[in-house]
Picture 1 (cartoon, helix red, strand yellow):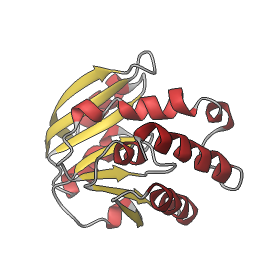
Picture 2 (cartoon, rainbow, N blue to C red):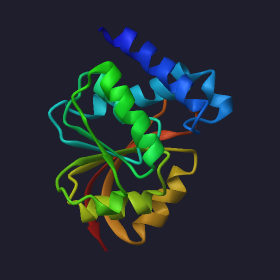
Picture 3 (cartoon, rainbow, N blue to C red):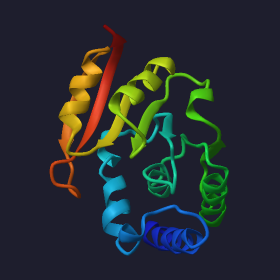
Length: 184
């Protein structure tokens, strides 16, 4: 199945499941392709397919599931909600994807040296704490219009290198690529 057909099937499954469990807000449900898929695809060029990737708080599968549809296989989608995990497993099976899905709290994840990705998970400070604990070499995070404030807040606790890439889907938002995380 080609990428376009997989994305269409993913969206179809997502809409069906969204009637039973809250995966997406109603106002973004009609624009899944533009609002969620395209937004997730922005990070493709910031990652290498051979990287071990950890999607923190996968929820409906953004961005990790979209990466998997686009050929990434070394991905763990970590989601603490059992219902959302069952959804993710059903998508994995329906699309025949070679990825791992973990139903657990990210704070229980023990593996090291994963590149961390997240979209709408939490503050940059929280994400840097996770990166530090997991000895992550890199983080790629979708951040909203308040990203400068989040950088300032996180800089009080951590030293880190960052590169913002302007979002193509949300004016004023960025994708932050983070490296070299250490405590102050």
